Image (cartoon, rainbow, N blue to C red):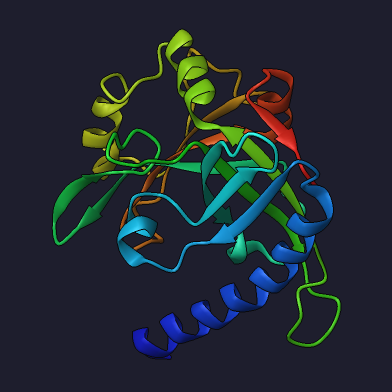
Length: 204
């Protein structure tokens, strides 16, 4: 399958997922309205949705992150991108990218398709980006501290344990140098850990 048809296929899957997500937002967002952002420049700034408070009009920018590579699976973790490679040079991932305007990540997990070409259920976990970054900073996980791993990642593949996190109950690094073209370095965090730490809340 060509890259072009892969891209088209991914786009079609995303469009199908939006139908389910929008239904969930309408049902579970009691105090907010929402709108999807179609402007590419804003999307590149980490804004897929805008939640607007029904009473005071306060707005929050939401970046949707969906586990579409793991359909019909219930994973307890989520991968936060720290760095990746593009045209041979190392790029900063979205988690510590200061140019992003994201207020909350909407982590879409446990995506199930129990009917043909239809996503039938999923979980949505909202993560407060600033609270998450503050939590990681308290654990000495910052853009600067993980830089050495980003530079080392060429030689590493797989799970990398961190002293600052319990690898079974909290999280770890994962370097994908052998199975992904962009060779991403991700911070894998347990969803339960994020909720228990007060930085995340299940919406649906």
